[in-house]
Figure (cartoon, each protein chain N blue to C red):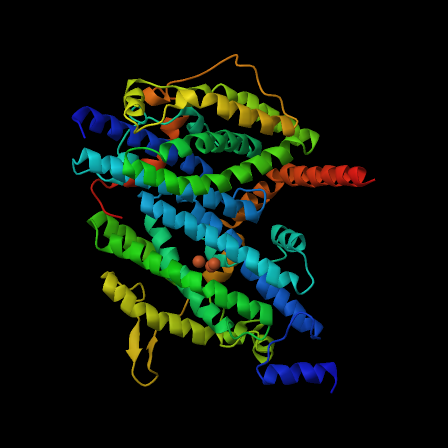
Length: 312
Length: 254
Ligand SMILES: [Fe+2]
Ligand SMILES: [Fe+2]
Ligand SMILES: [Fe+2]
């Protein structure tokens, strides 16, 4: 059996591909692209939520939010390590992010304007991420699959907390309820777009499915999310943003409005409120941290030299 | 508990809560601004510990006040003139060296203070201190490591760190001041006599700064007033931001 045949045999037999296994170069590249994009999303996602840490309306909410953002940083770290097993370094990935070569989820290009947006992000954005990530637990690359299993547990916690925060608003004062509705109206559509374009238009979908990097199509995952969100909105007592939403008995799913893909591409291509801000923030923090990282290197160097001298 | 002691304990718990929430808030300002991802996580950890302490102290204060207020009323519904935190903790986050030096001063402070508070006759205060001691051990390990690396790192990091030490030194004297309220509680075995702690603090801080090749400043200036609500201009801005959402919706639940 050639390495290539053996690789395909494993994929078909649902065996995981591990870092030391032979893999096609395009499989490796495809994974690096996807895992690093996922890692960048976790990290960039810290900004819109971090934006409200200093304004959280109660001490309990403040603590919950800090701990969520901290989890996201942990997810970023974990995913960077998973990508590193494919032969790319964290600093290379960060450079790709900062030069625009690598992408992050476009959901974070939307501005977080009110406290309800924080609740909506936990509920809808983490919720959409989970639908995708549960599916990715079965991805063919071992380290990525294991990462997803670990991350999903925390993400479902985030979603529950987000929903609970949303519930407090929806059952609160008229102003709080209006805030919740406004956040739902703004974040519902971008959350649906997190699953990516229709499969027919997704550049990477087909190969990724063949290699079982992806296990379900963008549209199937999106449908799952649409369906699961309907009763959640009902419990909140909020209006569903999709006026065309209708149960389809035959399909066993909700039919819904077409998404505004022009807007999706427009935001990805730089016309979101926060595209520049997110990258500038990341670059500024990274640049400001340079003297700190240099200090560690210099300190360790001095210690090493001292040790060597003492040993001599 | 006599009325006088109860009132003093309420004031004391409020002070300790104010210290915790203000410092915890300042640390939380670093999240997503750290020099690398691991530091964002560490900042998250430390700020969570302080927010947790604030909640415990305020909850106890609310219990003693028993006037219907809760922890959030203490944190969100008091103005800067009513806040009683130490000035050191309200200073803006500054650069990484500034925040780490402030943290070192705070961590050594709690390292000498908490083992005393743990012996308080007041069971609630003692229990909070007991939990906090474990956290502070971790905090100090981290801030000490950072000050060593920054002080003895590059020329630039050394310069920044020495500058931070000099800029913050004059705010540390207040940490060891006593007033009538705290003296009453110290005499009753409830509060800590912080005036007895400066030597221990100074010795530890001096050891660490010296190892970090930094100079311990002369005691040439001191600014005080946190415990009487006479703050720097920084606290008002901090509270404005912290309280804006809560105060915009009076009486709401979150
Ligand atoms: Fe996420
Ligand atoms: Fe995450
Ligand atoms: Fe999350």
